[in-house]
Image (cartoon, rainbow, N blue to C red; front, side, top):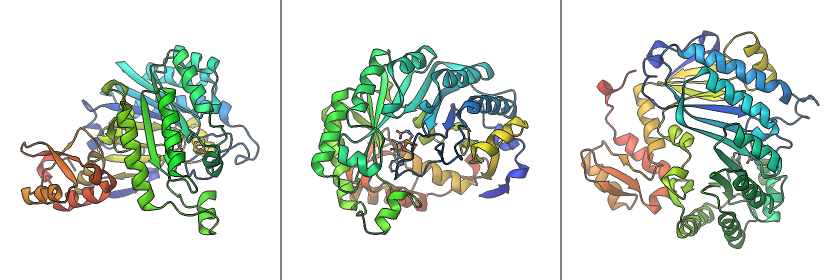
Length: 409
Ligand SMILES: C[S@@+](CC[C@H](N)C(=O)[O-])C[C@H]1O[C@@H](n2cnc3c(N)ncnc32)[C@H](O)[C@@H]1O
Ligand code: SF4
């Protein structure tokens, strides 16, 4: 892997541009603002008090539109159609619906877009009302993802979420009434103090709200968060690994029984059409441009990331410069490792281009199951393997003979 200073990132390397055509391409727009910071969250997001009382939201849409123009220019003449746009955060709905729609309109003006363009907006359940949802739908948004996290007030309090237990249910109802077919709920399990009954109640409430997609993530104790400090001081217990595995297995059983099939380790959908195509693009390691402070991008084995602070970001794009803080070019080994680490997570299976004896060992250890005995064989993680996905990926990477000839450096 080659790490290069930001000053030299004025344009995409020719090797990356050579891979652009024909590979699905998405745009991620990071909106780095939240009304308050949840105690467990380490994302690049800012409250008004973090910004010294200044409200930087109003200038943000213009800055994002400028970066979209810079991105279009940097990709050259052969840019493929954009297949997905994902507004994430932070809290995208901290912006006015018209501002989000103006950013989407800039994507549509600068890039060719696929006829079935997927446009997702992440939202906190208490950050949208029916009017906002109507405006987003009318403006071309096709999918909403609400951060529900839990149906229990005590769990939401430990997470320092701002919304009440019923808010996510109301938000899904309003989203359906506004005409959204694709609505997702995010859940978190393993919060200190959460019981099996709490988790069951959260799953039940999520399913009763009738989304067509559910994500369930184990709580990660991120360094330098208020939650990490509470755990360090012994005020809250660290999530227990066995409990996390039990909660995951229970979620999979309950969601499957309700008609949601897993398609990625932490994601379940009612149908193939309900899958989040933007996230599928990440897991296939396709190409995306991340717009906004701190956003990450990948094109053809080159990865880069933007400056984190909204002020530095705005100054850079206003001066007509890509707001890049750093970049790296992955070598063949790193690219293979990435493909394996991401690919093993998918329920559609992944090709195991490794020695048959290692494939046999993974099967005998109960970690993978055969989908197709081709050459190479296609396998999928077993339920046990899903709890040990990184270990399986490591064994596959260690057994991979690098296909030097088939990958551009
Ligand atoms: C960064 S948030 C952005 C969307 C929105 N602000 C929200 O909170 O729903 C996206 C998802 O990441 C989850 N998340 C953030 N930090 C996490 C952590 N430490 N462990 C597990 N999930 C986390 C959030 O709970 C949320 O569902
Ligand atoms: S609302 Fe979402 S992005 Fe904002 S602090 Fe909470 S989890 Fe993080």
